[in-house]
Image (cartoon, rainbow, N blue to C red; front, top):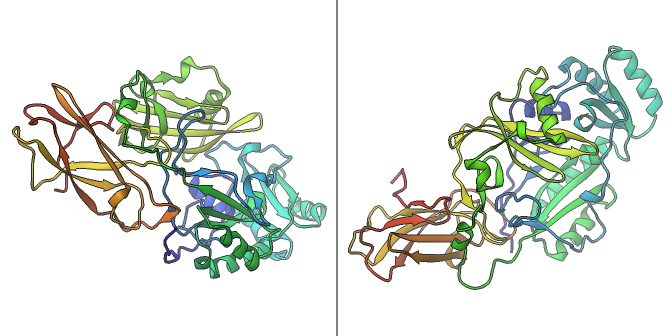
Length: 458
């Protein structure tokens, strides 16, 4: 059962273009074509109101282990799934790269005009899938609005006017009603106005059926779409993840680039060796002028599947730059970029239903060669509302060899969502079949297995 939680009051007062402008300035998690009008979240973010942080494992590529939280068939009550709502699209091709935004003065002209027609205006966004064309949506009078905007904007400006079912003002009324009653909706994870779908999007993780019924009582179904996910059941039986590390090319998780095969980190595949439309899209972005260009360097392919591609610049074990692309029809468009400049700590990708933990030596009981009992501190990494792990902690799995002791832990994440106040450490004792001796004590979830040490903060 999802825990009750306080609403995190973080108000978006920016319009769609303002947020996209901020997002284009190097945000690693940029999401194009998302309006923020009337939504509550952190300034500069492009995600809807996050009431809780859904606990998930690392992102997984196609045909690989799935994330901890997965979308599944569910009783949607009277509501339509958000993925089944087609996005509004421009019929005009723009001339902007993925890191470029229109002039603020131009977007201001359109937004001021929309404010004068509040009863029909359905917001403004950049259609990255169509070359960065500016799109303004209205519920009626499209031709008159198009002519009026053409008279206000420079002849060279590429914009389009499309029809929407609901004005932003109408959607805001629905969004406000959901916000006012959010604590009645068990399992709610986020909500907000999704401009390109012209709906109020509401996300749930592990909701009971009664939650969607209650939502149907609060708001009309037509202007709302829902995104429902369910947490997979963890594997049954004792923890058994170390053999995954022994694979010739294990699937690993690296912060900043998601799930990749380990060979892609140790022997990066240069983009110069790959012929693919996503690679051409990367080259186009690198060539395009921009106030916030992509990092320059030796780009490598981390992963490419049917709809997504991830590229990175890796210097040793440090990710210097990252760029993600998504397929939009026949075009590949930039969906995220940044230069995290952080070490890539490769962890074995866990089965669905499990999440990673930190493992450190207990500073009060450092291991000695004669010890057969090893004292460790284990802490949940993901948001967990500050809970004690208790029976959710899985393991240890221990494999002893003449040269080393391999230890692995995992955790069953919080079902639904959780707040992020920080998590306590659990003290765990690992029993060995013989004294530790001079053998190395290794965290087997790291790839390659790495020494277990005292936490840097003690």
